[in-house]
Amino acid sequence: MIPYGRQDVTQADIDAVVDVLKADFLTQGPQVPRFESKLAAYCGANHAVAVNSATSALHVACLALGLGPGDWLWTSPITFVASANCGLYCGAKVDFVDIDPGTFNMCPSALEAKLEAAAREDRLPKIVVPVHLCGQSCDMQAMHALSKKYGFFLIEDASHAVGGRYQSDAVGSCRYSDIAVFSFHPVKIITTAEGGIAVTNDPETADRMALYRSHGVTRDPDLMTRTPDGPWYYEQIALGLNYRMTELQAVLGVSQMDRLDQYVARRHEIAAQYENLFSGLPIQSQQQLNSSHSAYHLYVIRLDPNAVKQTHRQVFESLREQGIGVNLHYIPVHTQPYYEKLGFRRGDFPNAEAYYAEAISLPMYPALSETEQQAVVDALKVALQA
Image (cartoon, one colour):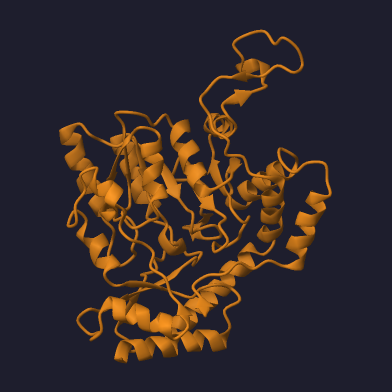
C-alpha cells in the first residue's frame, strides 16, 4: 500500500532524540525554547509558543484573544473539526464561511457577504479562522482588510502550511493576522510526532498563550497578586491547561527543520509531475494562486462528475483495492452529527458539500518515488475507466 502521507525520520533525528533522553530534562528544558526560536525566526515572527498539538495551539490562541460565551468564531467547513471545536472549548458559538471551488480555501467574497449580513444583525465574529488547505495560504491580505473594517481577530490555521509562503513572506509571519498555528503531526511537512506551535508578533498575546498552556500558573513576581512566601512560590492567575510540548518532541522538530525547505521543494516536484501525468484526465487539482507558494502537505483532486462514469466512492474504493492509500480531506464539519445538533444542515454550504462529493487526496510525501507516483496515476486511470 502506498500511503497518502508518511513521516521522514533520519538517523540525525534519532540521534538528537536519544541525546535528550540522556540529558537532564525530558520536559520544561532548553529544547522547547530552542524550537520556538528556530521556528519563529524561519517565519519572521516575533514570538512562538510550542504546545502538544495544533488543536491545543488553536485553543490557547482563542483564549489569549479573549474568546468566550456570547462570542462567535467563524471558520471553513472544509477542515478538520479542531478548527471549529476550539471555539466551542471557549464557550463561544461557531459558524462557517463557504469555500472557493477552485482554491478549496475560505472564499473572501463569501466572507465579505456574510460579514455584511452579520453587521446588520449585530452578530459579527470575534475571531475568524481561515484554513490554509493542503498548504496553500488563503488570501490573507483581503481577509486582513475585512478584519480591520469589521473589527475581528484573525487566526491562521496553517496546520498544513509550514514552509509555505504568501506574497513575499513565510506563512506564519503574521503580517496579515494576529496568530498563526502550525501542526507537526507525523504526516505534516515536518513532525514532532505530535505537537503544534502558535506564532504571533504581539508580546502580550504570546505571554497569555504561554500562561494558558501551563495551568495558568506563573512564577513571575510582576504577575503575582501577593508577595511571594519564598523562592518556591507560584500563583495560578488564570484557568489554564497542561498543553506543554516535551523536550523529545521539540528536539525532533529542531532536527526536522534543517530539512524543511528541502521537503517543500520535493513536494513541488511531485505536484508538477502529477500535473504532467494527469493530462487529459477528467479531474481538477487545487488552483494555485500567484500570491501563494504552497507547502503541499496534501495533493487533492476533484473528479468531474459530468465526465466520470463511476461514482466518487467507486473511484476511491478502486484506488484502495489497487494498493493506493488515498484519503479524503475533509468531511464538511457542519455535516458532522455533533454540529447538526447545533442546528447546521446539509445544504448550508453548497460549495463545501460539492467538494466533499468529488475530492480525493492522493499520495504526497518527499520519499514518494517516480515509480510509485506512476503507479498512483496508472491506478487512477483504471479507477476512472472501470
